[in-house]
Image (cartoon, rainbow, N blue to C red; front, top):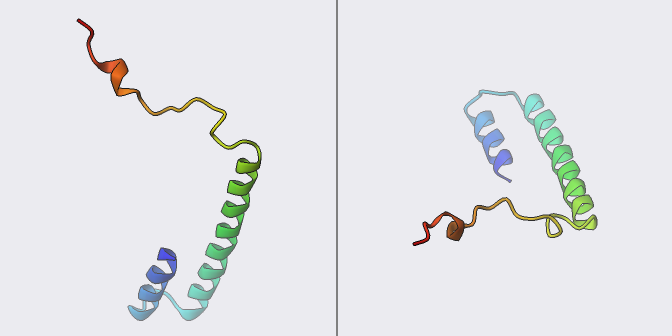
Length: 65
């Protein structure tokens, strides 16, 4: 996980303490679990496949002659 790498670097550079790092890693893990649960919940409800895409259609922008 990228966050873990940044926290490890912050410890080595003495920007944060070991205690702060442990607390931060714990919070990051909890947030990751919450995000995973949210994603699974949204997938169970059909996700975005039932909704129209918001991606622009390049063909709609080409001038017609």
